[in-house]
Length: 93
Image (cartoon, rainbow, N blue to C red; front, side, top):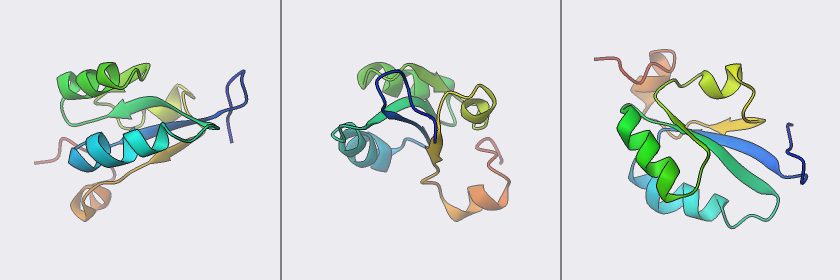
């Protein structure tokens, strides 16, 4: 598990609708040894808005950017089942 210089686990969240905005993000930010470093959403503007609102360094539409860029040591994918079956493609129509 990746940690930052202060020993916190770095995590990313893919899918930050109401559950993320009002539930997961505020709760995870209460954990003393955890830091949310990235969020991803279908719309880049929304991901950036959430990232700014919660002081999260990265907001993106690229669901795998967190893994590729090694921003986080773990990620949460609180998404509808249909998105999982599409291989994580949030822009699937």
